[in-house]
Length: 155
Image: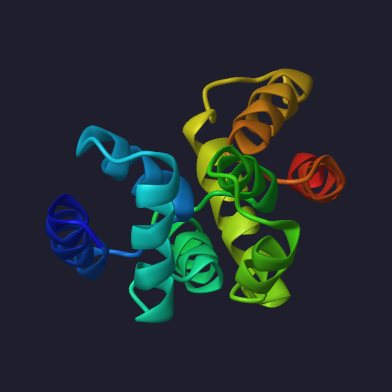
């Protein structure tokens, strides 16, 4: 490794220690430090070998965080992971972090809260449309949303 690669490795070890990172984020950081292609590849290999960079661990942490704190649905999380160039295998491992029961509970909680927020709206169809749009924007699946909206409209 060249001198600049060793410096970059040291900086990236700190960068990866602070929070989980994906390969795309590390590549961007390396480019900002002026390392490209083979030089950057060697640094990435060393980060992976030493455990500072792990795509599956990143996917698990990302899914857990976005679901628990931002209450995002699977579709939105998957789109974000694709933008970060995470493999399908690692995405599936990440989604193992979400328990189905908890997922449906959070969806119900979001739907009921938004439905209550619209209590001044008398037209049930308008409430369904607005609540459905909100839940779709959060990344939840239409088939889950539709069943839940039918229940809310009946109450």
